[in-house]
Length: 331
Ligand SMILES: Cc1ncc(COP(=O)(O)O)c(C=O)c1O
Image (cartoon, rainbow, N blue to C red; front, side, top):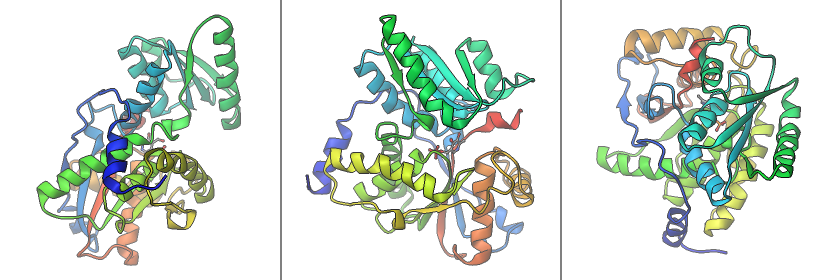
């Protein structure tokens, strides 16, 4: 179905969501950081680390839609997955509790020896956790648990990894709507967005959102915290295709148009690189802004490196989307 954007916007706005927090997160300038990194563009930061409280982040945007869908399916138990320190898993547990639902987490890795950060909150909430050995076992284990619950007469609802499917990703379409209003208020348009990515839903929503709200030319750079670009792009496209069809948006998205970069992962997920560690220190020291070591520090490292390489020019207006994750400082 092809339609003009206003019809597509109307269809998007009619999609059910549950309001979980104040999502009007501020956009702030970071104009002292160029004393440390002289080639930086005009840098702005979108503070999703401010969503709700210090411990929330980008996942809450997606859960507004996933939880509305769960409710529409009369779910009584939410099942989701992630690594043992997953922000998404813990936030899903917390939101489930907020909505009076049961929650079961399938987490890859061993039960942490020290229950700090996200695992500590999971423990305090008393959500059930099933540990599995590998990432590949998460989806089949969630499905097995869902089947068992159905046999007991329950109504389970699976939210996939990172809520990064064609439902949760609407949260970042909504975020572009919010951004567009803020741009109009500030009286400028950003030349690029840079953010941390992994399961791809944040990027999927931003890519659909920028086409829906007329920001076609603004590149979105997703900086991987772990997986190679091919895998993340596959996940993004499997979300964007049904989203575009659902609202009848005449703007196909291809793998070639996606800017996913895994050059800043270093030795692996959650392991700081020299640059990410230095940039984290500089953000705190000069701007008083905390980054998390797993996601935002790697994206900030890319931001600095892109400026050195001239991908960002000093005159560009670049928005660094802070996606939260700060509990991972404590692990
Ligand atoms: C703090 C933080 N930033 C970024 C991401 C990546 O977002 P996405 O999974 O939508 O690519 C995640 C989750 O994986 C996260 O917890």
